[in-house]
Image (cartoon, rainbow, N blue to C red; front, side, top):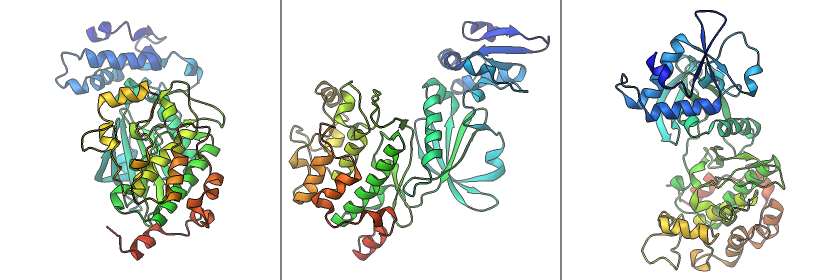
Length: 399
């Protein structure tokens, strides 16, 4: 019990009515401090430092139960719930046998900040899904619990949309969070398609605009629109994934959090004065510019090396200069649009990449009125009557 006494400033032991029972009085903030201290001062008896936090918690779990000292502790239950499970309730049900009982891991897909994504097969149906497995300790240390809960609630509300990946189910066990979603077979947008015709750009910008407007009307700001979060289904229609940075935000409201992917962030994010849903339309402009140039963006005139604007922004000086000048990492210059882009296409980019969000294009209605979408049927796109895959095959551009 020496180890327990060493962290008594974080975890407070209290006696229960029964002599053989003990409880730990803790809340979300306390548990996060608990994980942090254990990571900094690993126990001597733990040979594997990377798993020290799990080791100490297993030790507690064997003889201790938990009582939460926060506003939710008044919830009545017949059974005690450990802190690391309680923090993720009620959004993530506790199920320690779900993975092995129902699914078989077939392949690794990708990795992220909190875990990895795998391709899995369901035993009884042979259906294929994508399973994201996240480490609870990392989520708690980074104070990401509430954001993860928001992500799940947002996905449950919007996954019925044809251009958004369908969320199947989610659960937790003692150490991990599991999120199951439909498996999208054709991969990322720019990995699959190497050459974009004007017609393809029209379709993909329209599909993205439709899903952006849907999110905004639902009171959601996406904040991470980038090619890595756009997958393609069997007919090459888009499927938007990863709502980790999304937030419930009503029309007319503003938020202050500086987040997103640096090469797609709107300039107003860096001002510190707040921003609204218009930032997603700016990110759409960045994607459109990359499509027009077949994912090859032209060098900014102020850069002297041979890298492109996205690579150059990785330099710390560029990032600091961006914030000081309240400027986006992607600065709008006609030379960046490419030499072969016609006037209607440049007009689209100018409207989406407008620095002032008040004058930025930010609705389907505005898109319908510009020259780039003259005689274009948005209803056919909304109903997925136009197949991008067929267009590519007809042009013999299939990779």
